[in-house]
Image 1 (spheres, helix red, strand yellow):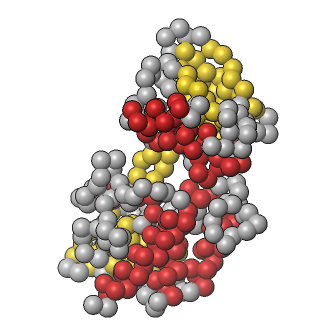
Image 2: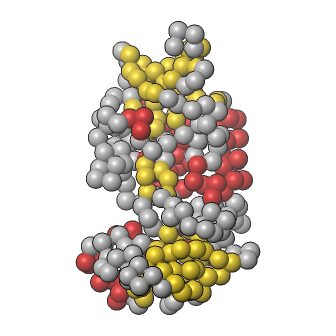
Image 3: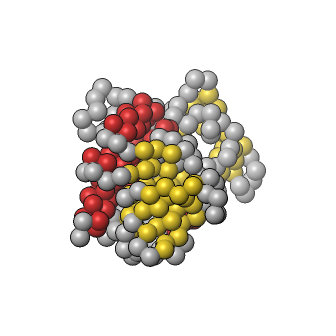
Length: 307
């Protein structure tokens, strides 16, 4: 570690998704010497968005990659730096956080975790190929593209059943497949879903997603009989769970699903350490809520530094 270059900042942000870049923009604009650390550069989950149509003020629609390029350019225009590095550890010495990467150490009194979360994939053939072309992990984001179309939901927990209810407001042809003979979701959620007309298919797993330019059908299998069949559809929404990326901060309090707990200022239990975006515990995860988190975290960091 003695040979690593040490760089001093006011504010270090880990993660260059919407939350991280929004935080960088607000922090840099307020005069904080700010750096964003991310192994892949600007992006996060937003890169998977084919058409971003529900971000206020961004119309006509743009794709996620262009949107994130604009966010990066905007943050850099205000003076934020972006480093393509992988963070290996976070420590605290005195009032400073020590963020270590392979070749550099970043030192700052304020730190924001915007590392996000990733969707659990099923790993079935066609899933990766058709992501953004009929395969989705977010009903609120992509459901309106499939209004009055054949929709299939995969999953059996609260998220799957709740999202199926939402999708039932867009289409009368919604089917949910679940590998067990009963749903894991709360009874009230399941009752609401069934009352909404969502068709359940129990004891069934997804084996393959098929199509040409877009999703056209699913190969499904009954886990009790082994019988396979093909189900025509225009979209499949997969809710196998999400995994928040919190490995760097195992010591912080988390909720029952592993998300970092913050207060309304995005502050964690450790002074000077903030969390924003999908990595933190909250009820609604969208690009617009991530950017709001990031802006609040930057404001809180500025207030913390100027106390």
